[in-house]
Every structure is written in C-alpha cells, then in structure tokens.
Image (spheres, rainbow, N blue to C red):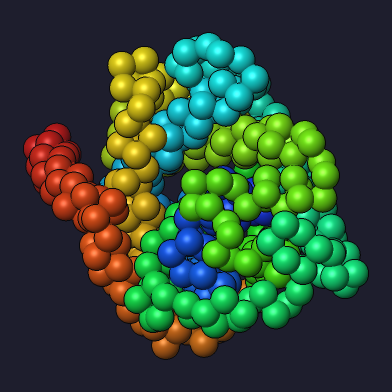
Length: 451
C-alpha cells in the first residue's frame, strides 16, 4: 500500500476549468437575487472584497503546495506546520464541509428536476448520486472531463449574459422597468441604499458563492506539471471574479433597477426573459441543475481524496488509503457516497427543510479551512525561510496580508451571527469541533498505547 500513488492525469484544461467551476457556485445564479435585495448595488463591492481576500488565501495555498512535491492536499502542510491535530481536525472538517454541501446540491438536483418532471425529489437526487459515483470510480480523468464540461456550461451562460447586457446598455434598451443604463446603479437610493448595515448583510450571502474555490488544492497530487498548472489557475482568479461576478452583477443592475429584482427569483432568468427568450427559465434551470451536479461531483472527488490522505496518515481507517485498479481511492469514494446517501434519505423524509438544514453549518467550516491555510503559511514563512526564499510562487504581501484576511474572516463570522437565518450555524458548528477534538484526543491515546 505504501507504493500506491495517485496518478497525475489532470491536464491543464481540467485544472483551469475545475478552478473556474469552484469559483462559480449556484449562489451566483440563484443566491445573488437575495444578496442584491439585502445590499442593493453595493453587493458588487461585497463580491469584490471577498474575491480579493480569497485570492490571497489561494496564493498562500499555492506557495505551500509547491514547496513540497510530496504534499497531496492542504492537510499535509497543516499537519507539518500546525501539528498533527490540525491535519486531523482540518481534514475531517473539510470532508464534513463537502458532505454537507454535496447533500445540499443533490437536494437542489431533485428540486430543479421538478421543473420538468413531477417526481419526488429524492428520486433524481438518488440517480444523480449513483451516476456520479460510477463515473468517479472509473478514473480521475473522468472527474476532470465531467467538471470541464459542467464549467463550460456555466461560463457560456455568464458570458452570454454579459455580452447581451452590454448590448442592451449601449443601445439604451427599454424594458417594463425603464431604460437600461449605467445610471440605474445609483438612481434608486444610491450605491448603498440600505446604508452600511445592508452592505454588511450582503457579505453573508456573497461568501457562500465562493465555497469550493480551494478545490484546486485537493487536486495537487493528480495534476500533471503542478508547478506550471496550479499557479496558472490561481493567478487567473482575479480575472474570473471580475468577469463572472462583478461583470454579471454590473450588467444585471444596469438593465433592471435593483428595487425591481425579487429576492427569491434568479436575476439571470429575469434578464433573459426581458429580451424575449421564452425558454429563459428553462435555460437557467438547466444551468443551475448542471451547476448543482458539478458541485456534487466535486464533493465526491474532494471527500474521497481527503479520506485517502487521512487514511494514509493514520487518521482514518487504512483501507481508505488503498487505490483501486484505476488509481482511484475506491473505498474512500464509496464511504463518501454512503454518507451522501443520508442526504437522499433526508430528501425522502424532510423534503421541505433539508436544504437549509445542511447548508447552514458548512459555510463556517469552510471559513475555518481558509483560515488554517493562512495560519500554516505564516508559520511556514517563519520556520522555513529557506523554502520561502527559493519559492517560485511567492504569496504577495505576506505575512501582513494573512493577518488582515484572518481579521476579515472573524468579521464575517460576526456578520453570520447577526442574521437570524444564519445564526444557528454559529451555535451548531462549535459542537462539531468539540467532537473532533475529543475524537483526536482518543485517537492519539490509542496510537500511543500501540507503540
């Protein structure tokens, strides 16, 4: 088992589109409506600030991963620089994050399929899970191909919206809501219509849209030429944020006054409908369906690789570190599938509340993961100045920017605690970490007694 290694079959195009797919969640297509409702046009600045903060997280992640070719994921360097407890807690937390997120996504698949077929939502959720599991068992390249095409669908949709929107703005297209114009950004109460409080509330929704942006860090051991492909994917992140988030929201808010957008409706559907595309709702439903399936696919990949790393390091059953004939951690993948099957069961018994139930906790856990990456990078700079000096992919402005972004993450947690619908996560999540620390303590005592 010690001689088994993950194969580097993910090409540059896979890594680039995996990074794009990770940066564009269903939150942009659906959640942006509620975010605009909370913050008005200032939501553009919220997305921009979060995108900048996560760019520095990704640069720190990239430098750490490339400092040692033996690193398979970020649990390896968190164990080295923060201690074995950090690798254990962060690894299992990341697994938990993606299990919760993927549960929400297979729930979304079930809901979106009901747009065309009136079937119980647990049936398409179950079928989606089975199909994606089978495809992931074949080869890692299959995962890359699936993500490549899922991401292409999202990119084409957003680019089409931006091009269409810019044309409407230039020609001064008139809608039922008025004329498309840049002035619509400030003509309805200014850029900050709900003041600074509304602006801050928008951060809660915006941060959820970036969940999964760190997925590139889990592909390191299976990336061909990681020294070239990982930096390229990370460095293109600012362009993606500007184009996909800022660009899309800019044209939407120029075409339709923010006061006319409904919190529960996708602004993408509204824009496409305005220009007379009757199938707009169906098109966007297809896009968010593939986006949800993409996130579920990413969840199966990331959780199986995380269990592989945990098993290899002795923090999970050793069977998780065994690879199948196709160099895929089959036991780890099947375990994650069984955990996700709980989401299908919840869809059967609690179809109306399961989505909120599983998403309210995972966001804070992702903030933990992003924070741990920054802390590990600070310690790396202090303990290994030789590696930092030799690095060809240095994180800019470190370590000062690390502390600034960490303070920003604490600020986000405070904001999450201020809103009634997200506050529950702030109280439930500490229970998870308490259980993990207890589990690690018992695990460490068991390993010591075996020596």
